[in-house]
Image 1 (cartoon, rainbow, N blue to C red):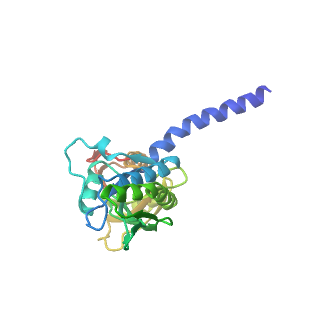
Image 2 (image 1 turned 45 degrees about the vertical axis):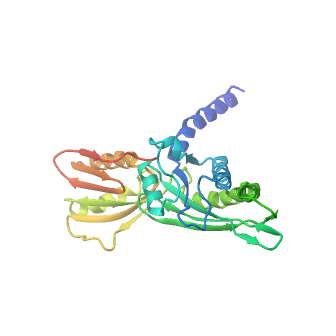
Image 3 (image 1 turned 45 degrees about the horizontal axis):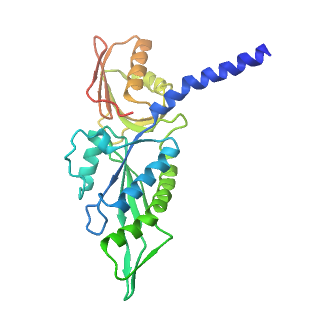
Length: 290
């Protein structure tokens, strides 16, 4: 019995130790409405907010880290309607977001002599904020439609659309959950592609480094960057990893110590430069987002 109790308590302690790490490694998500086109409904409408809330809840239910723009933004007077995609991406970049979910809601109203039928559709895309990679698109049309009898007002139209917006948002959230999971490794971290520059090291040292790359935390893969200027003393790699810059920095420092060489480490967004030098100097000029 004592042996079983010891195993049970050990398992509990192990779970308590790894759970916080899993949560902090998740990518930070921000859901943004793109109503730049006049064919879409505005971000300040009830149907739009219903869709946004339903998408958020679906992702939160699966444990994703969903941020709120209003809570993170310092300015309360910021205009949030009719923004272009480039403006939305700049917002996500300023707030330290990893993945932006940008979507639009189209009402699809069909009118006849006696009534109007609303059949809304949600379309959008997933974008990796810092490197601009497109992570996939989605376009989902509601399987339900709501008739609105004449005479109807704008409020009647919004009420009818809001009635089915929640279910449509949940359907979108389920699709996004599966899509985003493809870009998160088994430990919960988002896999990113870094540009890793090695400067001042000879070919033998670079070959030793490549062997050590594969032992780094979060390692996925690496390869020589095809269009980079690679020569003796300088190599540029495309390095895929779920580790953040703090983990990569720690691994590189340990690598240099094992090689018994000194160097400078500079990290700028998704670019890391390791230069052979007289001492270890670390420069990080951005704040990690996850």
